[in-house]
Length: 222
Image 1 (tube, rainbow, N blue to C red):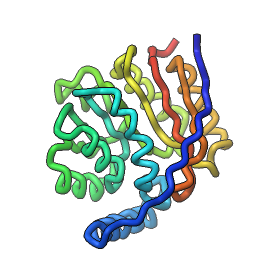
Image 2 (image 1 turned 180 degrees about the vertical axis):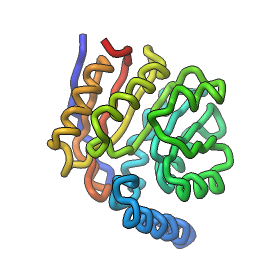
Image 3 (image 1 turned 120 degrees about the vertical axis):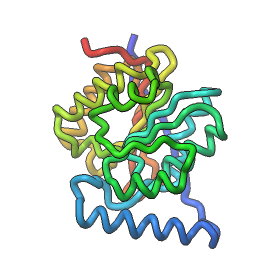
């Protein structure tokens, strides 16, 4: 029996220390340059906030030694919290299309297997690494901007790889884009591919505010 739930999550923003501000500002500068030169590829106006990253990566507390797949990490706000939660355990593959972002991530996070490629090529990417299943997929890809056929290709790859019993998929949907046709179509696709979909209240500590979509109990397309 499928269940569709709405939960409340609010994570207030926190101040950063002086030692954290310099790399964060450099990341912001890189992100803004890429957003201005390739807005369609970047898909966001600002990197995900720490509040959003903490909330999304909390699903990893369910696992002790997981295979984690991160899609569209950008400058790495999710990557940072994934690595903190893994604490040296498991495997972490991050797939990033933007070469500048991918290089920055590889330099900063040597324990992360950073792949500069499209998320639509997941089976090939993971097969080359001998990873035939994943326990958690964490992504901030702008699915409300991604064409329908590419959405389907990405979800085909994810549902063929994610653990059907305990695997979890979590992503975001910006509040302003929640009612767009592609966003509605993507949520319908999640309900088709997973038995449970949880939609949070907006995380107000992110700019722009975003819903977190968390899906469990995957199955292949019917």
